[in-house]
Amino acid sequence: MYCSLAIIAALRYLRTDRPRAEAIDTSISILKPLSGLDEGLVENLRSFFEQDYQPFELLFAVRHNCDPAASVVRMLMAEYPAVRAELVVTGEPPYPNAKVFSLKCMLDRARYGLIVMSDSDIRVSTSFCSNIAAEFRDSGLDLVTCPYQAVAGSSFWSRLEAVGMNTDFHAGVFTAAMLEGAKFAVGPTIVARRHLLDALGGIERFKDYLAEDFMLGKIAADQGFGVRLSSQIVQHRIGSEPAAQNFAHRLRWARSTRRSRPAGYIGEFFTQPLPIALAVLLMHPGWWPLVAVTILFRAASAWIISQRLLGAKVPWHLLPAQDLLGFAFWIAGFFGNSVHWRGRRYILNRDGTVVPAA
Image (tube, rainbow, N blue to C red; front, top):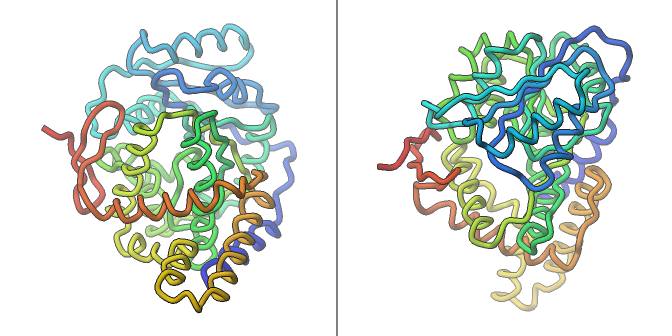
């Protein structure tokens, strides 16, 4: 049943009318919090410098001038002198969520009313700003969150994670949006009107949350603002982390999700068709036809969401391994209340907020 819902949700998204990018007088500020040299950082940032749109501005934030990402930004600013761009050095963050502090520092200097908050590992087409501006011709729209195609690095663990993002994660995103509307946001790229951020008390309202993206979308929707999935699909270049780092951030994601929406996290049991089917097969071998049907539905939903919708081919030989590994991380997410993030350890509270560990 869940796979069927995911397929229907993906097909509905594909049938959604895309707004036509026309000449629109919407000024856009793009905020890019940076920390270190992500894999492919130069080309990721270059894709924002090469927007076929005006007027827009780029703001980048680093903690210190010695951050290697600052040198990349300066190089690109020299290469594209016609693009309005600024590098902001924030210093050490006073907030538990350092990204939120970077966003606040950039917002304080942003000139325009439509705010794009995009991570350093995102790459976009040259028409991204035009298409986003076209979406916001709808006066009832206040915030969109962009689905993304996960592009793996060279490591095996990166390829597994990309499969999970392109199939399992987005199946949940599209199904949730279909069933109850977009009452959330996902972090890689969020676009919001400035008046929405001001009405919520500023981006600093989310300084104590690890999943500030989810909470931004949730609180905005709860307060009656227009929130939905964008028609723009971006690329999320996830890099090539070794096993230890990859496992650490996947565990952080699981624990953070459990704290942000505990009931929904328990319900994710029903979004794990392959591990459940294999468990049933072990207990009742005679039920193999049901398991075969489950595998077919899982394969169909994976193909439609990943390949048909996101444009990412499904490596079928990796899908079973990722489903089993994802199930293991889902179970692990029920245990422990600490996470490691950007070299520091944090304690997760029951409401999804975090405090630095002693």
